[in-house]
Figure (tube, one colour):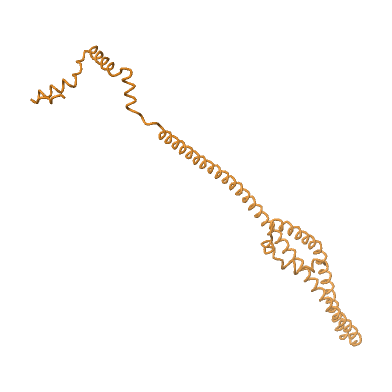
Length: 250
């Protein structure tokens, strides 16, 4: 009865505590399930023999008690018939059977205890196996959710990288615009200031002043407009209007 020798270990085993300490609960569950399945198979195999032993010892103990009662009845009948010697024979036999009955009763009780333990181990193993199978399913579900979460996190990290790249591109664009603005400002600072006298000299070099007045007068005549009053004549008219004489010219 190899399984019965491990009764205390099997009954005291705390599967949940064992799994909580395991570094890889999923792997430990598979290993423990295999061990429990082997123990359960052994329990089932030995249970029949243990129960048969219980039945046999109980039957022998019951048969012994029946013989004790039988010899006691015979002793009474012998005494009733006036045969004391026969009564002594039956009583001696009864006493021998009672002594044997004590041992048979012990064997029957031990066999019964073994049978009880086998049933307890069977029930405990079935309970542990069912609990482990439930936890195994839970672990698989948790692993599936964890993998899905990791994939979502990776996708989120990729999105963050893309967003970071766009932000970096925006910074590069701003830096490029700033460099362009600086270059334009530097170009403006490097421009040679305009020489107004030089521009007028070029105009008069080509006779532009007199030619421009003649061209303007011709244009006004063409359009029927009065010619512009020379500035000096206009000033003289203003002096006459206010009753003052113009200042003498040097």
